[in-house]
Amino acid sequence: MPPLDPNDISLYREADKIPPEYWEELDRLPPEEVCRRTLATHDPATGYSLPFWNDRLVCRPDSRQCQWERVPGRSVSFQEALVSLMYLLRAREIPLSGIKVNEKELNGGALFFRGPHALSKEPLEKKFARDPQGFLRAGLALGGIATHGGDAAFELRTLPRIPLEYIFYAEDDEFPAQLIIIFDRTIDRHLPLDVIWALVNLATRSILKAGDGAH
Image (cartoon, rainbow, N blue to C red):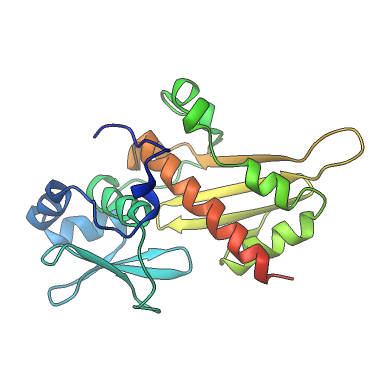
């Protein structure tokens, strides 16, 4: 799959540009094997139900559609559909390693996560610059669990085998705000780097939105 172009506005539209071969590949896979690897569930009538953030995303290979389970009318973006499909196709049946790494420590990450593919941290650093507790409240509103580190930290279980940990250092009179995103070492065995980038984009937008209502 060619790397995602961050300037392609279709990434932020409805999920109408997923390559059909992804759906076709998923449709060929035995549901029992997919569920074992991904910890999703499957119903022949409705397709796969995958925990995603604090909701579930239902993916139907037969109709090539995704919809949210709790709020079916809420639109599913290209990146949400892409991340969920790639997880269903590529996730492995392996436990978390417990080894925490940043994006530059992933295989190929030092070259990939820079320039246009730098992880989306700056919007959060600006919004919560001197408000670490607001940052924490936003994470908890998404179903995150408070962790230790920096001035505020939490872990999001974005997908069943993929936790993301956010460690925030607030701005002070000497240093600007800094956000560190931590992955389990196994993440690049489940998702390619450009899909990890897309997942972090989704997380940033979700935290920003939650921050607007978590006061």
